[in-house]
Image (cartoon, rainbow, N blue to C red; front, side, top):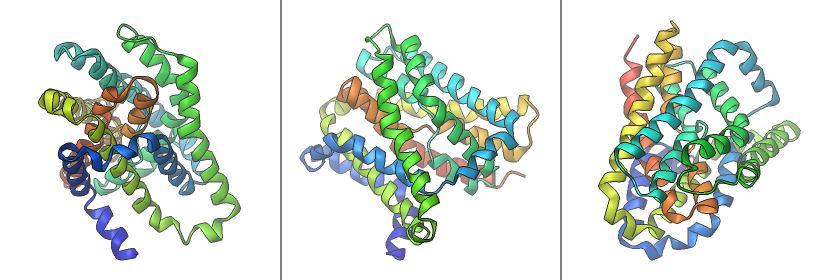
Length: 304
């Protein structure tokens, strides 16, 4: 199991690409996943909660200035870039909604790993992820209403409930179980990355499978939009950190945290509220940001 865990963790990007390709050319292999995407995301969030302790939330108060700046950057830079991109690319409504949804979501747990590899401030990255995740049930629906309301009716209450169900509740349950059964849990924590990666791979496969024809039609355009969104997030996040005269390790953390989104949440919300086509940007973002995150971490790790 340890060898499998190590292999899957090291080769996540490659595995995601392979599964996405299989789903694109043989959709029937992964169409069954779509109805289970919410459950899979819940499993990922539960796993995240299992790695946390209530004491970890003190990190937010230990570095309030940096965490607040990072969270503000997360919820301004990425949504605004997304809005500009859908206008510049003149994306059809269902894809525009998906791109904006990715931009309005909180940071994902992958950013913490990439920050570690980049030799950045991991504590700051984790704190930003926790804070933006906690705020997401309110902030994400409000941003969607402001930026995507022209294309589709947004139900604030329904989105808030969805985010609480698939993100907040599983994380809280994971934290509680970790607190109550810590000695038992510590034997399984090392396998949580494997479970999370498998869930992410299945989510990507399912979304690509049900949208195979649409992806073939607009694949290059939406791929360009996703890549641009992600890279601008890295660059502007880093720039903002330097404007506030933060150290390099903190700038690395904010850059990666801003650029990498919880695309699994975006995919789940798209399927639940806006239709399968709106989930395409989230699925492609899942594929791309693991590749770009690895490249960014490798580049930044050499900067001192």
